[in-house]
Image (tube, rainbow, N blue to C red; front, side):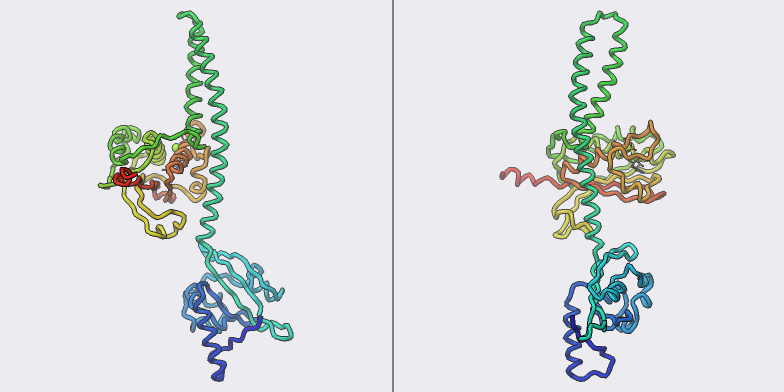
Amino acid sequence: MHLHCPDPRGKLGATSRLTHERCQAVFDALGYGIMLLTPQGRIEQLNHAMAAMLGRPAAEVTGRAPHEVVPGHPAPSDACPFVRMCKSLHRESAEVPWGERWFQVTADPVLDAKHKLTGAVVTVSETTEQKRLEEQLRRSQKMEAIGRLAGVLAHDFGSLLTMINGYCQMLMEAMAARDPRRRDLAAVLEAAGRATALTRQMLTIGRHQPARPRRLDLNHLISRLERVLRRVAGPRIHLSTRLARPLGRIQADPAQIEQILVNLVVNAREAMPRGGRLAIATERVRWGQDGPAGRADLRSGNYVSLSVQDSGKGMDAETRSHLFEPFFTTKAKRKGVGLGLSIVYGIVKQSRGDIEVVSEPGQGTTFRIRFPAAAGARRRAAR
Ligand SMILES: Nc1ncnc2c1ncn2[C@@H]1O[C@H](COP(=O)(O)OP(=O)(O)OP(=O)(O)O)[C@@H](O)[C@H]1O
Ligand SMILES: [Mg+2]
């Protein structure tokens, strides 16, 4: 590649200056960062996008190496595409982290007729959002696989349990009313009953359990459930509700939404052993074409959000990253199975909604679920 973009501060002739200006115009039109470096790594020329990424005006960084002027900029190392390109004299590229963000960096050599390095063209584009989406996809695929496995297992166990139940009942019926073995059999039946309930929960994770969705007023459901939720939360927790009206309806199975609320409230209670505050809120949200910032994966439209916020112990990043996996628990053996949130997740996905958690250790936790709003009554009637 041969590029001629001489230093504007040098003694340029009119033709060279024109070349430089044109080169700059091309640079600035690009949507990603681009800069010309000297073989020593000093910036010769850069575009608007690059200056914005570096957070410094172009004039301040020209003639210097990026890491000299920008605090936190990684120093040149073997991981740096520019450094590697200086050795290979071929295009080198890498995805490099910078603080919390990720950037795709490529370095191309500028060679003279004798194949000697006279400079480099370095491009930089941010890939943070793409990486986030990839990670999300990977995670949801994992959940999907675990869910399917749980579903298949639960299904087979369900059939076996039906048989166990059936035979037990037959035995029970054949026994005399006063037969002392009835008690043992009753215990078997009870255990089988608990196992059946558990497999039903596992089916929800695998989404094999058919939901019975209908148009549903979330506010109404919460108001109806408030008393029992208060009971579940216990006397040390102050529960408040903030229900937006009008809210609009969602399309969901009421029994499943109850399951969500109970699971979230139980978790909140367990995160606040010494009591605290628990707030349940509903809200109507509308998203434009691009969705909210950083959520390019969500479709635009009307949503109903349900949030459950506690003032409990919160979670670290490690816990947050495994939260929805079946059998992930931080609780003692007998206290938690680790199914609560995976069930919540299964239901939310089944309703084509979305769940998000905001939590830091010691800062409490907020779960926010968004359900797509049900189509308006008028449109429904027209169909
Ligand atoms: N409100 C919360 N505050 C702090 N940590 C939470 C909260 N909700 C969930 N967690 C964390 O997420 C983990 C998984 O929750 P999940 O409900 O799936 O399982 P569990 O509560 O441990 O067990 P189970 O619900 O099956 O009884 C919990 O063990 C806990 O570490
Ligand atoms: Mg739980």
